[in-house]
Image 1: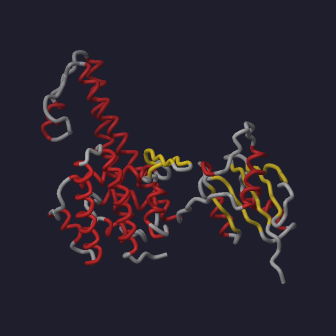
Image 2: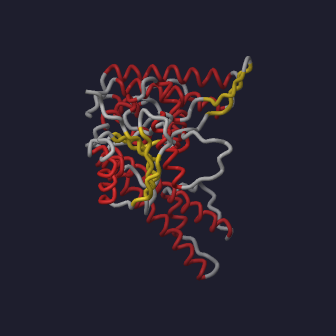
Image 3: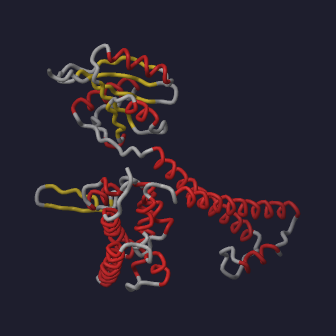
Length: 370
């Protein structure tokens, strides 16, 4: 008995409504617009019953967006095939200047039937929770940085410039405790700015403590520990990369992983000419920033410092060997490229591209629970 013909369903998802269209499989007929439904579970169940009256095999697709992956998890939990697709990779007609929810749903259904949509990676609930906590910690770091800059700018405008390193060490804090502003209102502004910095310091410490506590029981915690065999990849860099990218071994090759993070050069070639530009900067920007920061550590000669040795003592010998191999290769490459006159920023990007390849190799050596 042949399988039933699938029905390809495109969903244009919004906060208050979902526009629905479907296209019949094994047919060239244009997609049919069903209409808009509500975002409630009852509305979705009613839609599924209505569509299953046509065929029991339903395939859904919707664009990744602010509404998250709840719809995907609900549909896959009911046994339906569902894709969350990348909005930036949906084919667009250059001359099409009209965009409506109806058109978006119809186009999703048509492209889903033709196989022209690119799906995104959907993390598990636990993986997404760690990623959210990691992003909250990073947001607190940026808020703290801005609070410090506002306080420094305020003092500089009043001519109260600290002559030492304003890095909030003990000497700097003693200086701030002695600051007296010219007027009482300005003193209030100063005290509030100091209080804002202190609050963000405490917030950052709380979030980092929670992240360390939750990550210790995470299924990808062994990968985070193993990646610290690499120079420049301390705990925060490792947890950021793994939380943002998920299981690194889902990529078939390190080249594919580097392309996903946006660290490969852009290219515009035609006929005999071949032109390459800057990196594509596609994919996850947070992971790419962490990799670039880690890559700067390879500007120094290769050496297993006491700090690195402490990190790798509990790791298996093959992972330690990979860490040392990466350090020897990347430090040499950094030195050779800068000696040839390459700009340090260009060099460090090339080092980051190879660093993610070594991360992929290390992740292959670590067993991960499903």
